[in-house]
Length: 509
Image 1 (tube, rainbow, N blue to C red):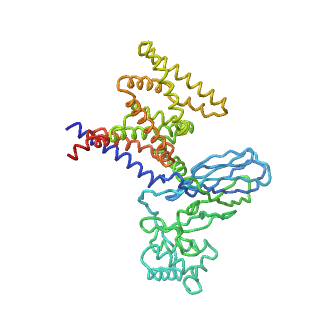
Image 2: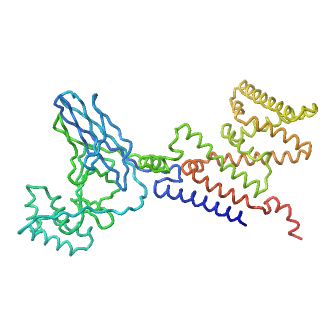
């Protein structure tokens, strides 16, 4: 009873770990069971043009940050000869710096390129809004601001509704004298966006001005657009100050917050920055892996995706073997199909991956048939077991060579693939089949041999399936689920399907 309880607990733990990890990778990291599913990726390029004075030059560019919706990865730098690039953090702001000890006087150009991946679903994290500073207004300006805020509150009570109302009033000053008065005050100052920010502060609504790029297919040589972010109590909402509409954060690349400078230059002048973006489609699983690497997700950093590509290709095949073992377990323990050896069908299926199914079946039958004839000749010599098996191995290799040579002479390279068959296992199987023939008769030999080929064929069909291949590579944790199923089948001691037919007459009686 204790052992059964421990087994149940182990199975449940394996199922929870395997299925839970899979669900997390789908919902959070963006993996997909569909190998053909694609996701949108943007390549954003900033072009920096400036005039160098002919001496030392230092160019500093504000860098885009990751957001709740977008991940910035794979930075590429292209600069004139003599420039070095470093990434620094100044007052909490990440910047890229290019420096040259002596730059040639005249026009200079630097390219900074990043790839932008859309995050899938991110777990919500509590957001702490910034402190609301005091706004200094007096006289008619204070009364005008209070009137606008009071009127905005009549349209709605939420921060989003109040913000939209204030934006609309400032965008249409001809219909509102108070808005016209405040805009006239700011005409020689910070501008209408700064006025909007002050009004939101007075309404006790946390906000901040930002600059960024709306990602689309047609961005070419554009400047960063100005927006205002409003905190609604749970998250930041991005408002377009021209239309009062809430922008989609999934397509907005945040580049600057508040009063951060976009570019700074020493040893030059006339700096201009223009932005372009290119939209493309890549496989969702590839994007999820790259995004996970950049986020330093332990499920990515400590997984098959951290291995060299050549090793990953090897494990892509190895990860299919447990599923082949599951098929063997189901067919042997539940269906009752007999095979020549426990894992012989898996090895044959691996050989079929190189030879294809029909050709592999023909080559396998040829090698085993000739091997059985050779083994029958050896039985008259009364050899001991080990020398007999070794002799069969020599015969098998000779058969491999003969089939390959004959195939090449006939103008076909199909015979060359016979070398992928596991020689040692086939030699031992030939010995077992021959002993079985002598002890039980040819019927059992055909039953076990046919069962092995049938099982190997099913495993081959599973291994060449793109869906299964993608599933094992993208979700290797599903091997824990396979292990749990094998353990459950291992506890089954009832009738197999083949035995039900055998005892069918007893049921009729």
